[in-house]
Amino acid sequence: MEFATIYWQDERVYLIDQTLLPNNEKIISTNDYHELAEWIKELKVRGAPAIGVAGALGMALAAIYSSANSKDELFDELVKARGVLSSTRPTAVNLFWALDKIWSEIMHLRDEEMFRIRLGVVTKALSIWQEDRMICMRIGKHAATLFNDGDTVLTHCNAGSLATVMYGTALSGIYEAVSQGKKISVYADETRPLLQGARLTSWELNKSGVPVTVICDNMAASLMAKGKINKVIVGADRIANNGDVANKIGTLSVAINAKYFGIDFYVAAPMSTFDFNIIEGSMIPIEERDRSEVAMFNGIKIVPDDVPVYNPAFDVTPAKLVTAWISEKGIAMKVKDIRNWR
Ligand code: MRU
Image 1: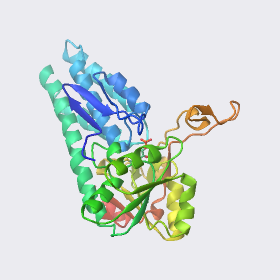
Image 2: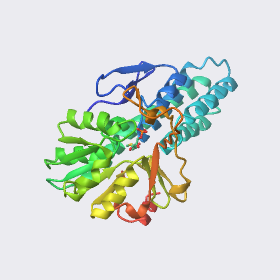
Image 3: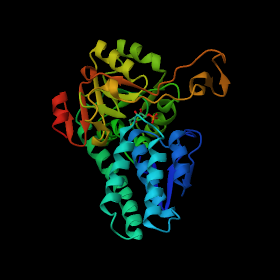
Image 4: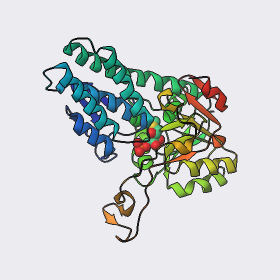
């Protein structure tokens, strides 16, 4: 897809409201970082790289619209904005990566005049936005080499254009392979509870002319058993130093099934998703979300009020189930190769 999921125009942040897809393609905009933070929590903008970009652009809003009359007041506002934005979603490390990059820029400019600091934050945020597109394109070039003409590929959640500024991570490889003339068809897991696969992955692949079929999450093993899937590719929200991968809940089941049936399981992510400070996947913070996401379906209650619900948004797939990791730096077949990317 050749349009940006999130962008900066006339000193406002614009994004496509992903909670309304596929029924309503609505672009919304804000000049208030508090509102943007709420939108990140509500998944109007989602997917690890897009969350990072949203965080950076949120800092740009804070810098521009701060009513500070002194540098001290401006710094106070920026510290507050960083706190508000960083408390939106805990698992996607891209958010903290982007906020840290903005913060380094602020520190670098701390002795400059106020307008230079404001300008520096906006410029850095826009460079993170631009870099995301380039990185996703490079991931796609590498990942495409893993796909052959005729492949049928399973993906889980949405690691496409909608999860980044443009192109995606896991789906970038599919877009690139298709543009090279390879015939690829995709099965998209619906991805309970919020249906990113059914609502978003199918929407964007279909819009781009890539054949896609949606299946319920619990159908994947059966399709694998019938030989209908010959590769799996997913994105990631955080990858630990040992190669363990945190991604949308349900990814672990897909990886276990793929291993059982001898199907390659690939993970595509930018370097900003690799967290070398986290020794292993069990240490990755996992977001838990509201019970209503599981207990309600289509506005109808499907779980009795007095029955508890557990709703972790992500799970961790051990490195031993991953065939290869793909980043803008290339393809790593072994965990030690990832560490060489540092
Ligand atoms: O809760 P979400 O929709 O933000 O979760 C998104 C995922 O799990 C994606 O697979 C991941 O962020 C990869 S994005 C390229």
